[in-house]
Amino acid sequence: MSTFKHILRTTLIAFTLVGAAAGTSSLLQPTAITFADSSSQHDDIDVG
Image (cartoon, rainbow, N blue to C red; front, side):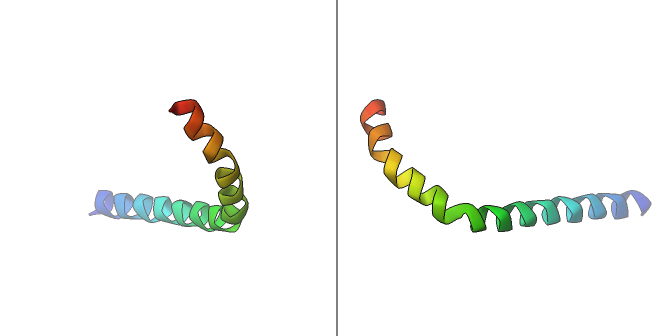
């Protein structure tokens, strides 16, 4: 039972960290989208 609780706690911490990272990236998302839109056209030409 203790190992199960340990796994549960580790999973919970991982989800918390992922959630915090997602929240941070969502704050930065508008600028990231702007950079992606401005550079995606050039990237597509280079890849193509």
